[in-house]
Length: 106
Image (cartoon, rainbow, N blue to C red):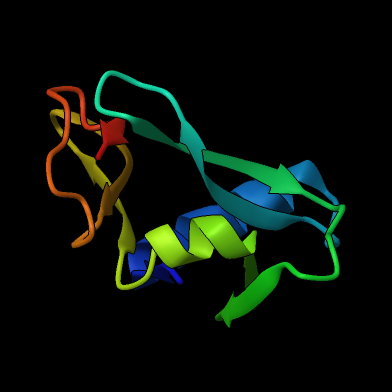
């Protein structure tokens, strides 16, 4: 399953705190679509399936369905905040190719 860097865990924790709902978790999923075949989907979720995989990173719960977790094995979610912009990025060693925007892979 995916791993969060310290920077990503901190930022996700801040965003969850702003939502004022401690039951939220970051759901990371892989969906069919995008220009390369699959795309990433990340959102806060409070509903979990019995087969969801869950990992805790410094108090931040990350969940994924089994199929997505398999495609995200060894991947890392990072957050950067710099002069050229800020945002989350996924480094996925399972991606054989990615599109120019970095939102989809195959």
